[in-house]
Length: 176
Image (cartoon, rainbow, N blue to C red; front, side):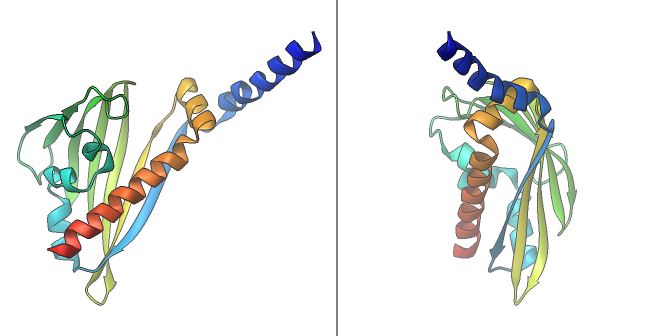
């Protein structure tokens, strides 16, 4: 009986903690690219270029993609579908572009979980012909997602994925 109570107490800790977690989350990573802002921004505003640096897009070589609108402008939508759970299905839309400053996206996930998040790529000159790029990803978590974030340290995993994507981005832009 004591063992059962201990097991229940251990299970209750993350279940209770998830109930009190902040429902809003933001992950932010930054990198320095050795190219001028105009060149970096011109590359980043084309959402199709994400195929060359975005870790999630690059995970499934059989990823099904569909595009609508004019890339590099507000309203362009990139849809994806994968049989791989970690890639899933969804769409990303360019919501706003402030030339030389920021690109804002809305990401609508369909599978394996439905939900909407926002993401931004922010650029600023860093001197000596360099550009600082900051990638933010934020959204709202329901109770189940709070529990997943807690149990599987998803915020750390997402942060690593953003950093990997930024490193890929840096390589792509600096090699041109």
